[in-house]
Length: 133
Ligand SMILES: Nc1nc2c([nH]c(=O)n2[C@H]2C[C@H](O)[C@@H](COP(=O)(O)OP(=O)(O)OP(=O)(O)O)O2)c(=O)[nH]1
Ligand SMILES: [Mg+2]
Image (cartoon, rainbow, N blue to C red; front, side, top):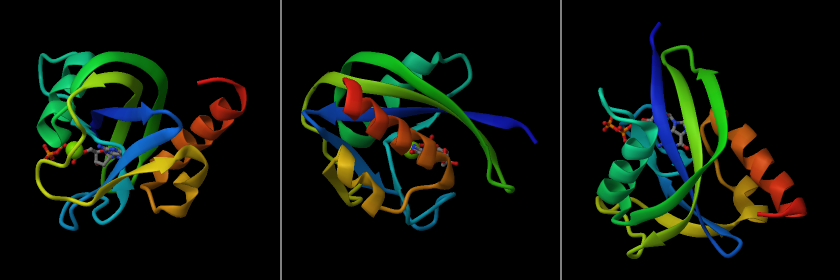
């Protein structure tokens, strides 16, 4: 099965992260996610993330730094999540297609149901909080 490269943005303001709910009819539908999407041919991950965050939540990314890389096999689909921290952006994060979204404290992320691949991202964020970011 081919692996799908996905650019994922952990958008941070203070100690809170922006999460949105995936539409029910998508892969891993109905779960919460960090905004982002599939890289298109000839696009870098940086470009894919900037484009997706503009399209999905209407922000312009000013800085993105690598957080982690996660490969996960859902059985029906294999993904490689390129997870980036976005802590500088312009515009106000707002779902462009009306999905639910919210800013959640890093410590409270466990209260939401995410796709299985995200468990490692949330653990990492909570570990980083203890030290720095
Ligand atoms: N955006 C996002 N995708 C995630 C996360 N965790 C996770 O397993 N995924 C998976 C679900 C999907 O299989 C894939 C991303 O696909 P997507 O549906 O967001 O892609 P896209 O925005 O380009 O959408 P489309 O072109 O298919 O409409 O990565 C996450 O936190 N954020
Ligand atoms: Mg998407």
